[in-house]
Amino acid sequence: MSVKPIIQLYPVIPAQDKERETLRPIGRNRDRYQQVVRDWAKLAQAADQLGYWGFSTIEHHFHSEGYEVGPNPGVLNAWWAGLTKNLRMGALGYVMSTQDPVRVAEECAILDHILEGRFFAGFARGYQARWANVLGQHYNSKATLSDGSADDELNRQIFEEQMDIVQKCWIEDAVSYNGKFFKIPYPYETGVEGYPAYELARKSGTHGEIGPNNEVRAVSVVPAPYQRPHPPVFVATSSSKDSAAYCGRRGFVPCYFAPIDKAVEHGQACWEAARAAGHNIRYGEKQALVRWVHVNNSWEDYRQSIAKYDVDIYVDFYSKFFPKAFDMTKVMADPVQAVIDCGLYVGGTAEDVRQQLQSQLDRLPVEYLVLIWHWAQQPTHDVLREMERFARDVLPKLDNSGTKVQVAPVAAPGQAALSK
Image (cartoon, rainbow, N blue to C red):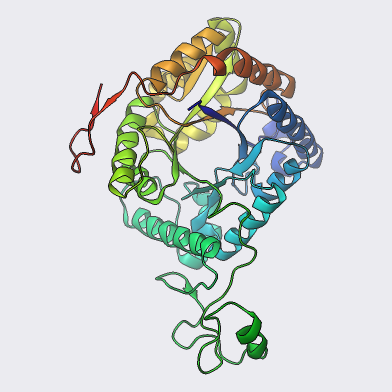
């Protein structure tokens, strides 16, 4: 099995020096966003031509500072579909605590048809309170950093219920669901009474839709996806081993935004849960590792790329959300080295990148690599250059066969199943 690379691009509005201040709110700057949209299309077409497996973006809202202007990834997926031939499209992903699960299922099914099966569905729980709390207010949901708090547990319950519903909508002709947060039909106890066209629904609609008193007792979510039983499901995760195990049980692909030690720990939990649930997969299969990447001519060029394109968002934004991942004393003393040391980056020459990634694949031979560039802070032509070099000089030399990893039979919970 060859590693499958997915390019994940954040919709960053390009800004130099103090432009985020002088052009505030730059996230609403029409000319800059138009530039982003048009250049994004060039990157999607290049990824298609270079043989990348997938192309992805994110869902985030209210980014007036212009770092992550991604309110509707599905619209972009649909546009890119017409510009490419082989590239798979998706997002990492729909933040379910802020979404209507039926509408997400419908949108994904349509995208799957537009792309004729070149679609993958990505989901996340949400960690940015500024927007997740606003758009999740109908569930009383709040953003979470997987800290085990009451808000975190509520967010998890909502996410898992929503995912149950999305899958039912994709797979079942007649959907009913009596959940804590969502009910189909509504009201669930009586069904939808007084539906005028019940006779047509009983005669031509899905079986079980109409009850004995002519009430709506189930709904049929149309269309069904193009792929059977549904598109591949990816779930973004950073610090929750429970989320990794959940993905393993459900046959989903966890995407680890985490250093390799934590990713290995979570990868083992995912694999054990998958095998215990009856999924006969090898260690690392149906798992993904997320890495920011720079392919340069030298180590010094790599440091300069981080200084120019990455430091600002890490210092001003990411470090505020994930303070445990950053030693702020080191960040202030040498921000470039702090970014390198966070464990999420690979970079240097093509051979440097290959060696760094191979050492991680030797420990966790994942099926997918999610690669992130901080475009459009990094100019489009420079991202294209790095994409080409990665596809030509790094990707063909990576081995994710797992030959250097020895695994034991599925262990009891908590028992080590991986021999290093």
